[in-house]
Length: 208
Ligand code: TMP
Image (cartoon, rainbow, N blue to C red; front, side):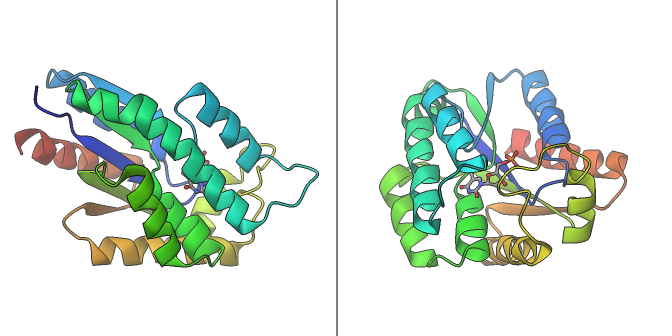
């Protein structure tokens, strides 16, 4: 059985991940592949509970290291219970966020050491690395403006723009360091143009 492909979408809030994930998934399905669409933190019942813990405003302080370990605990569940079995069964997996989010948010945003994050990544999912990562990029003001329309901002959405500037720069740096895995799409373009870019990426992926 040929292993399925693993594709991840990344970007700050408000860049249009959900719409573009649906679009890419339609192309993959139209080509006859089975696709699992999932997200992080989350993707399994227990990992979704961890998502609630990490994203909600609790009464207790959340040390940065606890945040990092929680997103990786959720990832361990997600990889072992969903992602790896699906890929091994030949399904494709498209995930809204994966470890690059930890590098960008906990590394860039919170300032935790990149080496510690890489060590956890290696430990938790050394053999599972995305075949392709689509980074939807937009300036922070634009992302925040779009995301700001949502009600009840969570713990991350409540961060200041400086935090998201660091997150965005880390993403762009990751993409620059690994051009074989990342494709950066300018998410400030009109929706139809972004869709066309996603179509081109889908075509390249499906003929690969
Ligand atoms: P979203 O998927 O709806 O954008 O929300 C998930 C939030 O969790 C988002 O603000 C980014 C954050 N996050 C991290 O900080 N680290 C991680 O490893 C992941 C997967 C998400």
